[in-house]
Image (tube, rainbow, N blue to C red; front, side, top):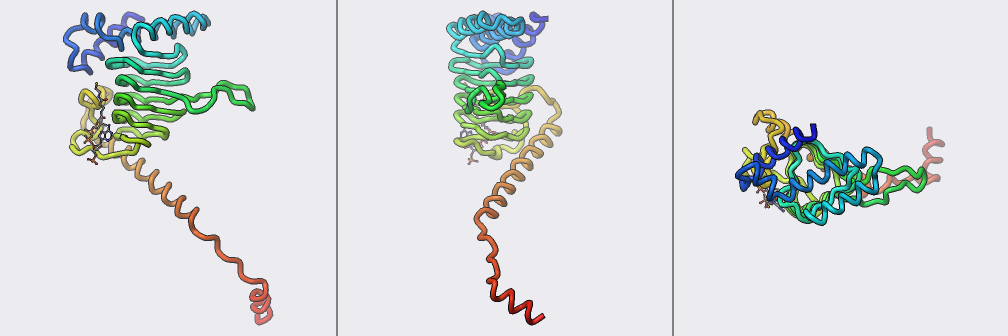
Length: 248
Ligand SMILES: CC(C)(COP(=O)(O)OP(=O)(O)OC[C@H]1O[C@@H](n2cnc3c(N)ncnc32)[C@H](O)[C@@H]1OP(=O)(O)O)[C@@H](O)C(=O)NCCC(=O)NCCS
């Protein structure tokens, strides 16, 4: 089972990194792949309740690969970490299938781990849905969701949900339209969607849905801002009200 997983992980590296020439090269030379092997072992140990050992082994993995993945994070199939260095994946992160992240990406928290009222350990790291791509150096912060097939630009700082199929760039990240419209909803290496949905028409529809959702969100934000700045209706003076009712 675990070897079958590794086999498809290697295939994913081959498919998504144009520089990968052979499976042996991935096994020997890809720190992102090594980090994934460490993670799959530490996640298994964590599940057995060997938490300190899992953390220690995970730190050993960080020493060799430069990638820190908390053993409790939930990571799906065919996950690719390209180059690896400086990637940090926090404890309550959830990652779907066919996700790609580049070097320097943080899936981090912005709030303390334990709810001071209930003492419950709460989710504080992001969720990346299937086929998401996170560009190098991007910081994805808080318990937010990056939608299916969404692309996050290099060095973006994301602290709000990103709809499926869109591209978000900048600090704070905002949704942009790709210059080449045919690219919407697809992926080519270095920011191109994974092989999650092979049908280009469906991918384009997904992308348009995501963009409509992002626009709706913007409209709602503008409406609530406008409502906030509108002055409250003035109360009629007491005297005027009495005159009107006397005349009735
Ligand atoms: C975000 C990304 C996927 C967008 O690719 P794309 O769909 O081809 O988008 P475009 O190049 O058409 O750009 C669309 C707009 O976003 C802007 N943009 C693109 N990437 C950006 C980034 N990282 N930061 C800020 N703005 C960016 C472009 O300037 C353009 O703006 P404009 O319309 O005002 O001119 C790509 O630029 C990216 O950052 N990929 C990550 C690559 C990476 O991490 N490589 C590491 C390899 S080791």
